[in-house]
Length: 198
Ligand SMILES: CC(C)(COP(=O)(O)OP(=O)(O)OC[C@H]1O[C@@H](n2cnc3c(N)ncnc32)[C@H](O)[C@@H]1OP(=O)(O)O)[C@@H](O)C(=O)NCCC(=O)NCCS
Image (cartoon, rainbow, N blue to C red; front, side, top):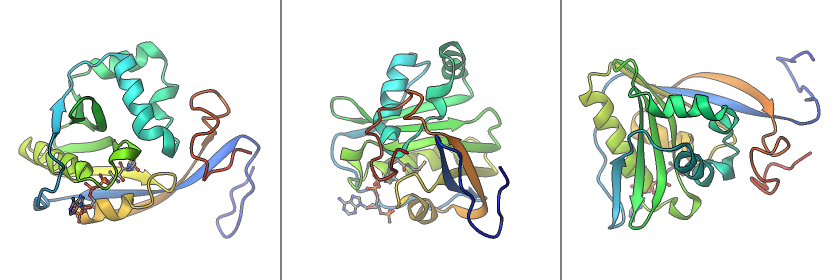
């Protein structure tokens, strides 16, 4: 297959594609006023079990076809989750975790926001802002000079705006082509109905 950089490219069956936007923050952004619903709390989860993590990852990311962590072999995911430089936080919403913040702080001066989001029921209720304010404080209090992430067009349509309002600036664009995670059993076939299964 040849990628046409000036037009359309048909994908082989079973593949999905997205446009990826990379964003970075090179100095600490000001905190935004808190609006989170009562009962929300950000908590560190040290060395979570694979089952706990996969359940939260699916509930947050399944509707947006997040597959990254689901394709890792179980032992590799266990190793990642136990790595102290890979920091995991939950948005606690009274009786269970409803949001995920995962930071790669193996190099505390150049931190990647690996996974970030709340479950569909929580969108627009202040939890995302609370998690982001927490992330910015954690990263910059920890001596960062750069905080960066990427998001793609399969994610929530408001994600790029949310990150820009949070103080990130777009700096690069790319394409990601991958096997459809619903066809290889990583996610249910009815996930993300807005992206037809072909
Ligand atoms: C992108 C995402 C994290 C945004 O989180 P969210 O919980 O919807 O965002 P919030 O409700 O905290 O904040 C949205 C805005 O509404 C405002 N808001 C929320 N509740 C409010 C309330 N009760 N009163 C007034 N304003 C409120 C917030 O202040 C915020 O405004 P700001 O950005 O100008 O500060 C969320 O849509 C999400 O998790 N999506 C799915 C996963 C995903 O796509 N992740 C990102 C890609 S990796």
